[in-house]
Length: 212
Image (cartoon, rainbow, N blue to C red; front, side):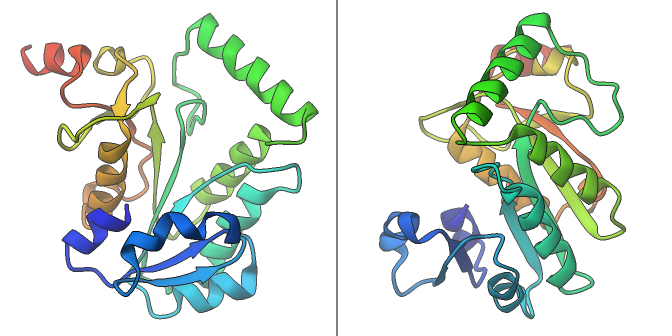
């Protein structure tokens, strides 16, 4: 996301957990890095002061409501007209009209249970975070990502309002293109108050849809 934002000429302020700051070393001198947890309300208030947009990864780390408190801090402190773009997975549903396979639901259940038992992550808190966002009048977008893969960018992903749409069947997006979609959403008014589920534009399902 940082590189895509810089490519568009944006000034970037990055809030990053101290253990991950080294990942941003290649941007040294080009961005402002503010080390610390993303649910630190004072840190977020300083980071978003005067910004035009905020890109937030709703990471459900630990069992202390990390994702929901991060989302709440952004909602509380970002400037009134700022575009707020959040990311999560397909398991989040806005209106209950998403259609999931039994295998998908089973995998989410097992991963969620293991993560909670190991105190590694709390998927239910990501659900809570998104409920708070959906209820907010702020200019938000919640980008719901498919399974991610590495590789060269293929272009801007395609999207649907609901998981279960045939266009999403391939369930693959390049990580770099997920980031591209996040940054593009900042200036796409059609995505305000939407929760797009995305998939790579060069996947079989996307190409089949484009071909009619």
